[in-house]
Image (tube, rainbow, N blue to C red):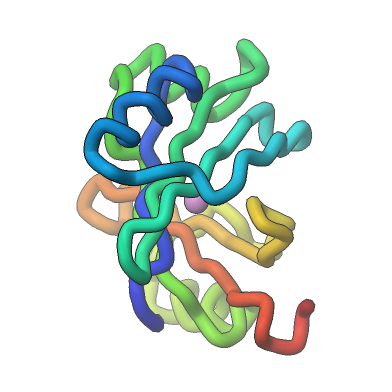
Length: 136
Ligand code: CO
């Protein structure tokens, strides 16, 4: 697993989340709708890492469910991997419970897969394949 790519934070309102982090000196680099996930995501660079603020756009989205159960806050941490399919296979062999056994197309066009929080001490882990590798 490579360096930390981003930290996902669930917010009720993206505009309010962005405004709050702007007070801390972080501005959005991109805002993107992911209709398949029912999510709108804003990426805020903080050095080499980004914050991904996540707003639900559908009542039945994973973020809506998360906000209902846990409220706003830390949702996932994402690590870069060279090859997401290989990373999924290694995680499975190592005994991790996977949310995705096949990569899906995530924010910024990257191939991603999630590892279940139950097998990572309560933290949802996202594996992100950077666009420089062969899937791009
Ligand atoms: Co993410």
